[in-house]
Image (cartoon, rainbow, N blue to C red; front, side, top):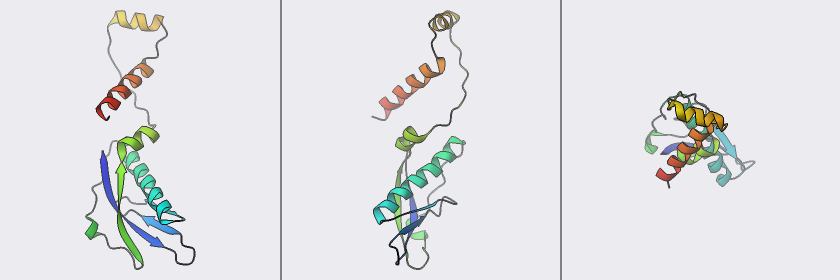
Length: 134
């Protein structure tokens, strides 16, 4: 899933450091020593914010139109592009318990061979996911 959110950037004229706020994601703020760092940090912060919502079963908040965002004096607005699939693959770690049903003979085989059911399912789903997103 690809998302875009407008972000407000503010440069401290004394230090040259940038502060960034993402108005559509309450409390999502970060910064960087350069504009490039601030953009990268903002993408990371926004991605983390959205991933937390998704892992808790909430939808990603809708983004405001770029022209609807008015920064405080001295600031400017730019869009952040989030690649949630890539971010979740790297940083998503919330585990979800799933029950499954398999034939008894397959369970006997797996237990005799010390198969980790969770790992097999996770590996298989990861492979399917990667094939569909290649």
